[in-house]
Amino acid sequence: MVLASGVLFAVNGTVAKLILQAGIDPQRLTLLRAVGAGAGLMLIAILLGGGFSRLRLSLRELPLLIAYGLTGFFLVPMLYFVSISRIPVGIALLFEYTAPLFVALWARFGEHHRVHARLWWGLALCLAGLACVAEIWGDLRLDAIGVAAGLACAVLLGAYYVLGSHGVQRRDTVSLTGWAFTVSAIAGLAYQLITGGSGAHADGWRPLSATTPGGTPVWLLAVYLVVLGSIVPYLLVVGAMKHLPATSVGIIGMIEPVVAGAVAWFALGEALNVAQLAGGALLLAGVGLAETARISDRPVVMVGESLNA
Figure (tube, rainbow, N blue to C red):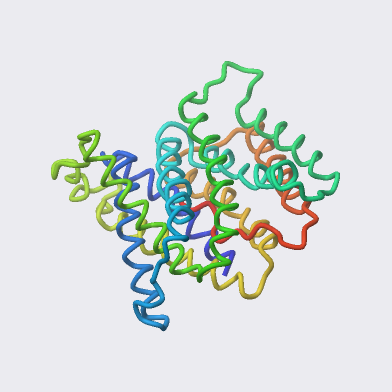
């Protein structure tokens, strides 16, 4: 289940970039994904049993749901879409995949959990990997905004993991994720109305009727983004959580940036050089060390993978 979800999320990175290249801006694409995935997951939550009572909310849940939806389901995907519109998909995902490192650091300094010494080795490997990916010894050809968006995405994704670990203690993951996507959709609509962005106008959605240079309808890519790039992989991760510990899910899920880089190379011609490939390997190894460094009776539960890739 984790491997299948990782592949679907990975392919979704290239799909999202093709939609962006067709003319849909990151804010509009975030809104499209949130509305579609939120509606789909809400329907699934109802059909799983309990009817609408499964979606019932209490006032005590609202602050957590709002924070969870804004960080993980509105800002993370929007920043990710900004990042992949400016730098290669594989590199953007490598930046985003430093999120578990921030979770481990939060567990150590924010919640004062005991950690293994390998956390610091993991941190060192991550920093070395990022240096190689960005090729800091050269002319820093990576777009600065794209890199900043990727790193900000990682920090917010780490916050999503921490908030999600509290959210799953109060309700099932499917309804929790459905409500989070709904918060994201409301935030996206509010953003368009407040800023008067192009997404508020019908013309902003016209690229959905176009086709990619390869002849694929953009609307079909949007369907993949919502169904196979969001709803199905989330449900696979939820199912995997019944059989594997969260740490194992997170480590196995590291297949995503590897597959995403391969798909982007094949479909978009985004090849990584030797230094960047070596940096990616160092980065994933460092994240793996960090993810297994916590010593806690109540580990952080990761209720999804990279959310948007």
